Length: 353
Image (cartoon, rainbow, N blue to C red; front, side, top):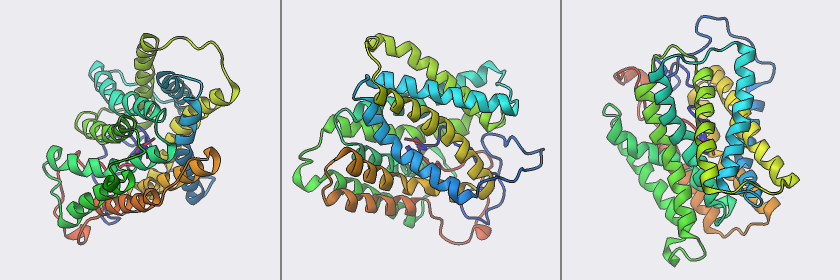
C-alpha cells in the first residue's frame, strides 16, 4: 500500500541517504534525515523482528478495511484511519520534540502529497473492498512498483529503463491479468472495485514522484513532514466525509476496533517501524516488505474471512511479485554506474495499503 505497501509506504516513507544497491554512493534524501547531527540510538528490538511486524501489520490492513466497511461507509473508515494514525504520529513528534513545517509553500505541497498518498488511495481501497475480496485488494497493492516503474520512465528523465526492468514491467502486468483471469473474461470479479484498487496502487507512485520534486530540502525531518501530511489528509477527509455520508447511528465493537487498529497500527505505528528500518538497514532491504504484504493479506483473507481462493490468484500474485522485483533491480555494479543528479530518484518505496 508499498503500498499498500499504503507503503503503500508508508505515506512518504522515510529514505536513507542511499538507494538501489548497497554500494551506491550517498545521495541527498527527499526528506532530510532527522538524526543527521545526532548520534544514532541502538534499537532495543532486532530489525528482523520489526520487519516481520511491519509485514504483518500492512498485510492485515486489508482484512481490517474489510471488517471496517461492514459497519461504516468507506469515507468514514478512511477518516477514522487517518485520525488514529495522526494521533500516533503526533505523540511521536511530541516525544521527539519535532517542529511542524512553517512555510506556507511546504504546507501546500503537503496537501497535494496527502491527497495522492493518503486520502485518495485509502478511500479507493475502502470503496474497492465493498465489492472485491481483501485478498484481491492486497494483490492489487503489490502492483505499485510496476506503476512506479512506468511513471518514472516519463517523469524522471535520468532514470533510464534497462531491458531487465522493462521485462519486469511486462511480466508484472501479465501477472495482473493472471490474477484477474483475463482468459475467462474476468468472470466473477467486480470491474469497478478492481479498477479502484488498481487506481489506489497507481496513486502511490504519483505521490512519491511529486514529493521528491517538491519537498526536498525543506529543513523539516521526515517524521515532521509525514505527521503533518497525515494531519492534512485527516482535514481533507473531515471535509469530504460529511458531504457523502450520514453520521453513524451505532458503533459496533469489532468494526470500530478494526478502524482504530487500521489507523493506529497500519498508518501510525507502521510509519515509525519503517522509519527505523530505513535508518538502520537502508531502503533496499526495508522496501522488501512490499513482497510479503500480498502473501499475508491473502492468508488472512482466506483463513479469517473465508474468502475463496482460485489457483490463478496465488499464481498471478507470484508473477506480479517477480515482475516487481525485476523493476527494482539494477544491472551491473552500482560503483560502475554514473551517479545521477541528487534529489530525484525512482519511486521504489513500499506502498502502504
